[in-house]
Image 1: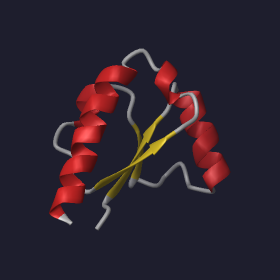
Image 2: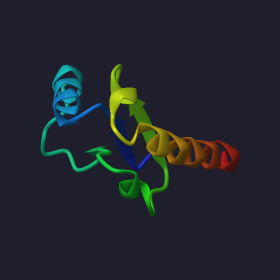
Image 3: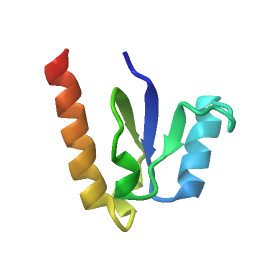
Image 4: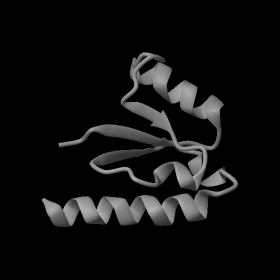
Length: 78
């Protein structure tokens, strides 16, 4: 069961655009912008959304590495 939606975006502006386009409330605590790789620590049961320009984020490589590890762990648990 997914408990959190973690959005990978170039910056907070792209995140806000995605959230608005998705019809989600700014007050929804289950949707977060991953601004730094360390925000991924301790997360579990996460669904990642990758915005079109997220790879332009200054720390995209490290964030992607950790996000993929979390996704793989979730897949293996079933």
